[in-house]
Length: 260
Figure (cartoon, rainbow, N blue to C red):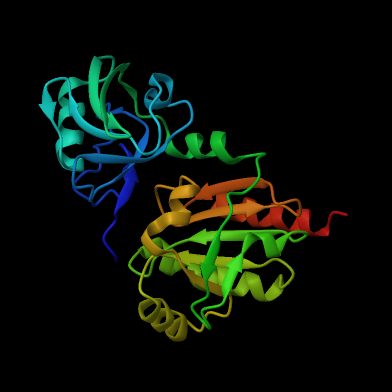
């Protein structure tokens, strides 16, 4: 897997990663997506609607330098400081905006359920725009070209056991529902994706999401994740994982496709 350059603090991307929180531990969060490689501090790439950072007035482009008097230069340092402060604490964030040093005070809140958060941001709203290069021929797959069609985005990776298990099922489903495009989205190298596609004989569309930019835009912190978009380009449903929830999403896709 490519290095994950950004993530939404503090979303556990996978339970096996070092920064994933134990299920029983209450975690604070700022609600910002950051660039982990920013040199002069921690660059805010996106502020999550309704999160503490948005309430305090933070903006994309701000560079976080310190929490209270503790300097933070990496995502690990920032997470460590936030955990030490704890949910409910009021902290002063030192940051730069357009070259000027500023401070803002905010109250740390508890990390919400990520699926509920994603639903609140996406359901009933236009699907975030994307242009993804096809693994097959490098042509760009754009949601602007899918207007009038029901389609599904599948965020996945070849190293993900649940994703690998779901792939043959999704492939079989797409063959029976050729009118509903399913677009596989992975941040891995094209050669890695293509090797898996060839081995599993997958026939549905596969694309590369460089640096997880599209997955980030959709706020999906876990995989496999599925986004159902209706004929008007509006997000109708989404789910994470497989089983009955995926089955329900696919059933919805069929009904939406048949509706006039």
